[in-house]
Length: 331
Image (cartoon, rainbow, N blue to C red; front, side):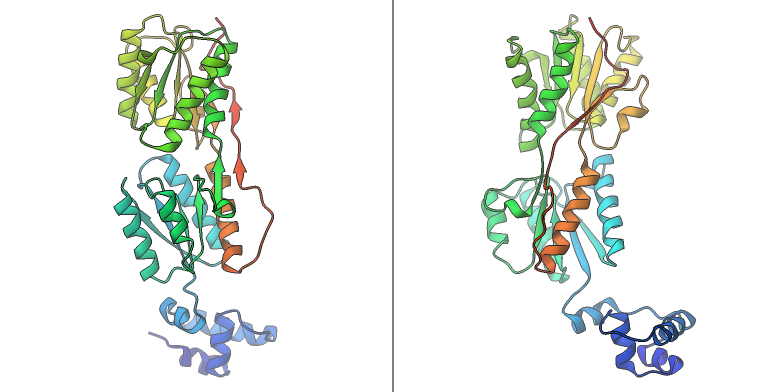
């Protein structure tokens, strides 16, 4: 395995020159940099990340905490963070919180042990107080899709309640009055906010709140199937259904297809969607778009500047966009 002294010998420069060029330190003539890069390529030399972190006090590693690795939402988040970090020659370390505060604590401890330069945290279970305590530590972090009072500059947020209200108001404007809702787990703040948007839209239209028209799902496709089955059997007069994520509306659509219930002739559908999955369904389903890709990009930008101790002006709050397709009708 080639070492830094081998690169220096082949390039005809000293070891410190090779090290500084690798770490982007100082200014060098173009031909000197070219010789070093050619020598590295010829020897198939790869700098040691550990050695570089010890020398520069930077690991060039960023930790990303997610709830789990399943589903298009988390895949899109990880892909966008990775793409942004690639532009800055940073390495991504991911860890799952696995639906618990203990899991999230363990993941953050792992990032700390690996000497990550900063963290992007999609934390759903740590308390606000714990996150405020974490902010007292020297390692910077940003909160993706989470608001904590006192940490506003670290928060990249989305208006989930407005999105739920927007989706259901659209159905109401089309004439629907019997509107079902498949929520996410109501133990989660964002799930409660989406569900509250549904409730607020009904209240604003002076419509009755019928608890049995709601089904608490788990964001999985199967729970969407079971929700559609339960709601449609209990409320055959239901004309529209709002789902709080794209996987559950996919399960609901499967139920309706299997039971020859025509969409949108017999039932209109609308959903949350973060990865435009609703555009691939048949029929396509209208959705309020949750721009997780844009939010992840901004999270990396904010974190990068926190690491550099720079202050930037950037939009940290995102609002929904209603994307009209073919899954609903006027009645």
